[in-house]
Length: 392
Image (cartoon, rainbow, N blue to C red; front, side, top):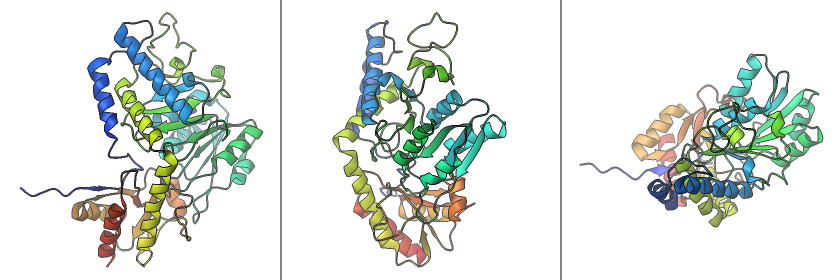
């Protein structure tokens, strides 16, 4: 029987892997002892499940500098959180500002609402070289009808971190709500709802938080009034069952139906691991690996790296960088790296077609390398050596 080589996993921007050991253990223990429907007034297992949800709500709220854990909504993923936010907050005639860096989780629901004539939409550009937006472009796009600014915290194509705090201050000064898509940052880049003037934060559990898939959240700061929201999903709750409508009580108003309690149990263990290992240290580690990669491929004339390439190319990045090799489509290159070198990367458009149009890689896209906290310099060396062999 032929042996299967150990895979070098460099696709953490899609889903982090491996997970900390405590994640599977917490999920297994919860399934074995507390996996009932949560409910404050139920039997002991129901109460225990509700307490677990409350504990993880508190964890996550503190982690992002929030103030009220009842305003932390558990979701299926970041896409779910964004849809709850957009369809719960926006009203007919509203104007929304977003950017050409956004993931389809932001772009598609907003475009659908614009195509239906429900909202108007403005996408501001970004520097194709530096990979960042100019907050003044956001300021200039604001109109009297602007209700929301939606911004990715870091590009999932280029890895570049966007000026969230500056954007938040502009939004607050103009009476506009600011939503931060933290899909690529929560768990590594500091997020503070108060200090960064954020009204809503959407995030997944399965990326840099190192939790299981099927988990995520939406935090709505107290600047978002409950009376201004519509429930995107209505159904059962662990609270008031007598009302003919979804009870206007957080978190249940936006959290209809049985939550993914098993996943949340694992997410809580993952957040504990992230906190103990200091997110800033993880970010520095991932930046070193990105810098190692960029330095290692500079000599390859057929290889193009997208985004800033100065002396410190990883200075304003998370652990993500995209590239192409002349003569190969991204899909061909990804297949070769997987089949011949056992290296897992992500080819294509990365669900961000507008960004790829700006950097000139549409419609094929690029190859994305995204190390995580468990990757090593040896992993990046293997990728560099493989690319040297392919490009030769």
